[in-house]
Image (tube, rainbow, N blue to C red):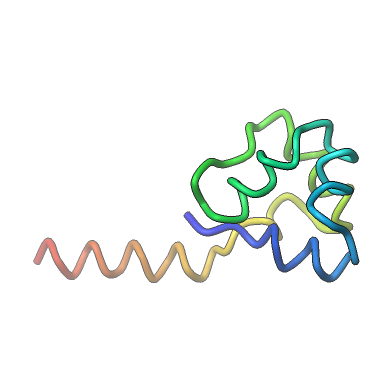
Length: 77
């Protein structure tokens, strides 16, 4: 599932290092989240959303997820 972390971080005017400090993780974690290599753990989501000035739901690209689900459903037909 795609997340919108990079987009919200840039809107907030934060560097990866600054966001990492606000959330309590290393810069590498933010890099991995933005690249989709790893996802933030559930306990980090409230702090991440607060740091970015958005809701937890906003962090997830639900439209892209819906397209992904539809693509898999079409392939299974």
